[in-house]
Image (cartoon, rainbow, N blue to C red):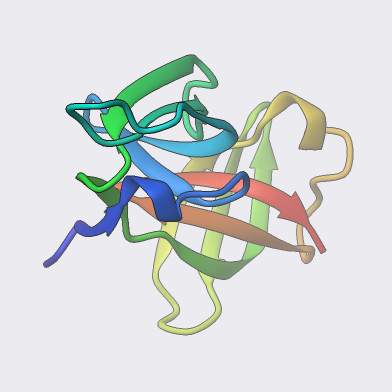
Length: 130
């Protein structure tokens, strides 16, 4: 299964995703310097990890390839809630699994509700409730 693809650094914009140190991150800021006499423009890409929330920075020439993770958004139905853990069922393939509920969603999570799950690099994170 393909986990990532490539894109040019100069094509990245805030809101897109990039792999920095094998961590899928969401781009929040892109700065570029002008090309110099002997080189290409340099890109400074600042991003936040989508699973851990840590801030990462990538320095790269503008015409260099960067890794972009393949992000899948899935809809799940919450079957049961126990503390900060929910048992969920994927509505497309009926797969059942347990996952942690983020702190900001714990209050609204209840059996029968649907949630959006972000899946990348073999990891899953509950994004929002529907």
